[in-house]
Length: 488
Image (cartoon, rainbow, N blue to C red; front, top):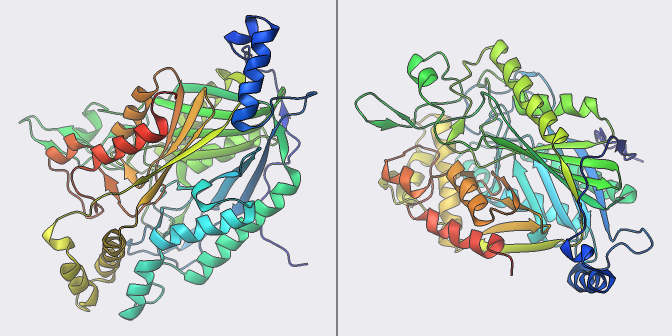
C-alpha cells in the first residue's frame, strides 16, 4: 500500500474538558412532554430523527493534510521572489458533516487564493471523496501571501505564451488535491457522533485595522497594508472599521469536544515576500492551540477581510509576528472559555448563485489583457496578472456564477463569501440575523479579488487585484438575503 503523506493532528478520541454552560433544547421543552414531542417530530421531518436512545443522527469526520509548496515555487501568484525556505508547513484542514441529508464539507487551505477552474478542481475532488454534490463543498483559502495562487485557466493562457509553470506547479497542485481527498476519504472511517454545537467569541486586542485612513486634509486613501507599523501616519491612525471579535464554533459529542472552528477578519500576514514559506501568525496560533488540546481538531478561517490588515500594529519584524501570534491565540482561548452549547437539532444547507460583473476599466478589457499577456517586454509578474484577469473575464462572459453557501444550525450560521470581500459585508450579515451567531468566512472562490462595498467604491478604491465592478454590494446583499434572511 502506498504511503499517503497526511498529517493527522486530530486523534479522533476527543478531548474532555469542563463543559461550558448547557442550555435547554428549546422553550418547547419546558412547556410539557406533548409539546416537546411535537418539536421532535418537526425536526425529524426537517433533517432526520433527533437523538433516539442516546444516538445522534449527526456525525463529524475531521481531516488534515500537507499542502506545502516545493522550493522554487511562486508565492501570491505575482511575487518576484519564489520559495526559498519552508519555515513551517502549509496545511489543508477540514471536516465532513454527516446526517440524513447529503454530506457537507468545509476545507480551509493555507494558500493565498484558489481561483476559477482550480477552485472547481478542489470542490469536485472533495465532493467525490465525501459522496456529496459540489454545491455542498465549501473551500476557503486563508490568504497567507507566502503561499500559492492557483488558477487553471490562467495557467493555460500562460502556457500558450511560453510561461508554463510560472503561476504554479500544476502537477504539485493535482498531487495536493489528491492527498487532501485521500485524507477526507480515510477520515470517514472514523466519523464521530456529535450532539451539541458550541458558540463563543472574544475581542481580539491590537491586530486588525482598516486599510482606509484619512489624512489631515480630509483625503481618503487605502494605503495601510499589512506591514505599515513603521509609518507614524498609519500607526497612529484609528483602527477604522473592523469586526473586533474572533468567533469559535465547536462540535461536541456529549461533554467531549471534537472540533473548534475559529474565524477572524484580518489579512493573515505579518511578513512576506522573501521566499520564507509560512502559515504566518494565524497558522502558528492555530498550531499552538492544537498543542493545547491534541484531541480537538483546530481549524482557522479568515473572515471578510479584503480591507483589513494588521498594519497599525505590525512592521514586519519577528517581534511583531510573535505578538500577533500571542494575541490571536489568547482570543482563541477566551472564545473557548466563553463557549456555550446547544443541542444540534437540525442542519439546513442553502446556496445562492451570485453573479458579479467584471470591472469596466480600460486596462481590463479582453484586448488590453491579451496585449499585456503577449508582450515579452513586460515583466513575468505583470503577464501573470493579465492572465489571471483574462481567465476571470472569460468566466464572466460565459455567465458562470459563484456558489454562495450557508450552513444553518438554527442557533448559528456559517456563510462563505467569495474573494477578498470587505469587512462591511461580514457586518451586514450579522445585522441580518442579530439574534443568531453568524460566522462569515472569506476567500471562497477568489477570482473577484477585492470586493469593495459601495461606499469604498465611491471613495475611489483602486487596486490591480480588483476585478469586479461597482454595484457588487447589492448583488451580495441579495444572495445573503436568500441564504441568511430571517428564519422561514
